[in-house]
Every structure is written in C-alpha cells, then in structure tokens.
Length: 439
Image 1 (cartoon, rainbow, N blue to C red):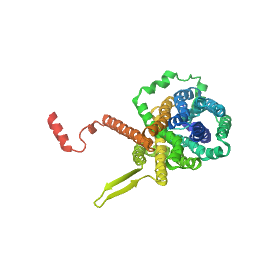
Image 2: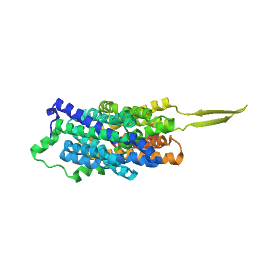
Image 3: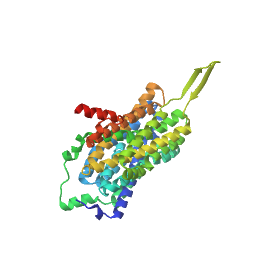
Image 4: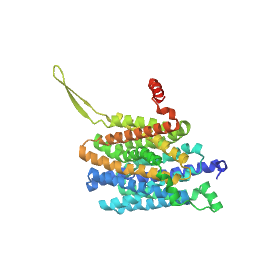
C-alpha cells in the first residue's frame, strides 16, 4: 500500500492547482446555456419548458456518464480520462455554431455536457494524492472549480451582446481545448497508479467497483448531493432567466447577479472541506440543511396582496421580496450549498477508500441529474402555476426530505451503536416503569 508520506508536497500542490483549473474550464462550458440559452430562446421563440430542456441537456449527459468515468479513472488513471473529456467537449461546443434548429441544438448540447463528467474524474485523481486527514480540504479546494459557472455569467453576457452567442461558443471551445493540452503536458499520473504499474497489478473489475452501490448509505449520500449540487446547478442555470422574468432586468445585469450565487456556491467550498475536516462532515451537513430549509421557505413565498377587513374599512398591504433581499438570501443559500457539497464528498474517501471513483460517480450522477430535472421542473411549474417562486417551493420540499432522512438515519445508527439510547429520553420515570415491568 502506498505511504502518503512519500508523496512530495510540491507534487500535491501542482496536481491540485492544475486539476482545479481544468475543472473550472469544464464547468464554465457545462453551464454555457445559462447565458446563450436566453438569446436562443428569443431567436427561436421557445416556451419555458423548451428553454428548460435545452438548458438541462448538457447537465443530463454530464450526469449519466459520471459513473463510468469514475470507474475508468480508478482503473486507468485520471489524467487520460480527463484529457478525453475536455477535448471531446471542446469539439462539441464548437459545433454549436452549426446547429440552426432546436432539435440540432438539443443534440449538440448533449455533447457539450461531456464536460460535466470531469468532476468525478478529478475526485478520483486527487483523492490518491492526499491522506484521509487532508482529503476534505483538498477536495473542497478542487470543488471551487464550480466557480466556472460564475466565469460564464460574468463574461459571456458581454461577449454575446457584442459579438453574438456563436462567438461565446467558439471562445469557450478554444479555451477548453488549450486548457486540456496544458493539463496533459504539465501533470503527472497519480502515485497510486504509478505504484500499481510498477507492481504489475491489474485494475479492479467493474463488478468490484460497483459493489459499494448495493449499500443504502451510498444512495442516501446521493440524495444529499441531489440537493446541494443538483439544486446549485439548476439555480445557476435558472437564475439569469429568473432575474429577467421576475425583476425585469436585462441579461447583462441578470448574469452578474446570478454570478453572485455561483460564486457563493463555489468559492467557499474549500471552507466547507476545512470545516468537515475539523468538525466532522455530519455537523456541516446538519447546519447546511437547516439553513437551506429556512432560505428556501423565505424565497418560496410569492408576492401577495392582503386585504384585512378592519373596523372602519378595509386595510390592504402587500408582501414581496425585493431585488436586494432576494439576492442576499440567494447568496446565503449558495454559500451553505457549497459547504454541503464539500461535506458530502468528504464522506466518500473515508467510507469507500478503494472505490472512490465508482461511489463518487454514482453520487455525482444522481446530483447531476438534479441539475437536469430541476430546471425542467422549474419551467413546468412556471407554465402550470404562473408563479415565479414555485421553483423555490420545490426546493423547500426537497431539502426538507433530505434533512428528515439524514436525521432518521443518524438516530438509527446511534441507537444501534449505543443501545441505551433506545429507551425514553426525556421521561426517566418510564425507564423505571420498564425495569419493573421486565422483572
């Protein structure tokens, strides 16, 4: 087994920094439709549901391929797999300029989504560079690559307004291709893979890699990630459209404000990793879900007019969340989502050190599917309810379920580990009664 003390610090820093840059570029491409999709919607006269489907297509691909990419990264190393992911996605992004119909755009968007599979490849690669005590912080720093979404929202609107959305696709494609080449030239294979090659060991079989997926715990982690990551991606894609529709902003201002959420949900992920290393991932998850429940509840309340029948006549007043408080609460929501994302992936190398790629793959797959299905649900809810805040109503229900399941699972584990907790907790008189009854 590889002794992590033999791994040089300089090699760790180089692997972490370059992989984070690569993931940032991939994420910027993965969320490109959050901006160019707004212009495409106007050009083609798409409905809310059609727009949501277009925005979600890259998320679908990037989610479904994560499991297999994670397994292949464990088997053959993260570097070659990540190179293939970036180059293939760059090519598909360039081909967007030749898609002149809605069906062709949907098809090409699937290819763009390959970039979303980069996350689990990087997780598998980097987890083999660091010890368990350092993995939370390291993977949290790597997860900051989510800020690529903010890069797209900050820069793409200005490029699109000046030169059109075709130029955005071309610039993003070239940038990703250049990053892919530099990544391959400047990085090295993970130490565990090098040792395995020296020993002549064969990579694990797919059946062995998939064995942990039989455990319910893996699927519970997946639900957590469905919210903290899937909802993050969904809102990163949806918020520009939300600001334009709900507050009447132009795309440049909407993109800048939406980028604030993306920054909050990305730049502080390293803090979440540090807190998970220091205080435990479970505590971080509790705080994350409680705060997110409160934020989603406030955000879900629609603008409402009230009429109170007073003594001397009717009293009317209205309740509405203004632009500034909305942006602040969304920032807080994104901040704690970033903590939660780091905490979820802190669990995986600890519980499944030999199957990081496959477990990270299925968790990332389910989380990524949230990024696909939730925007689609947002559009459908808008069409059905005609209420802008309906998207946050859905997120409130989702995070409340996740919190309840997590608490129930933790209480069950505690009772199994400490049988004395199974008795009455707040009524000691009942403990005496139970003893008497047993005698």
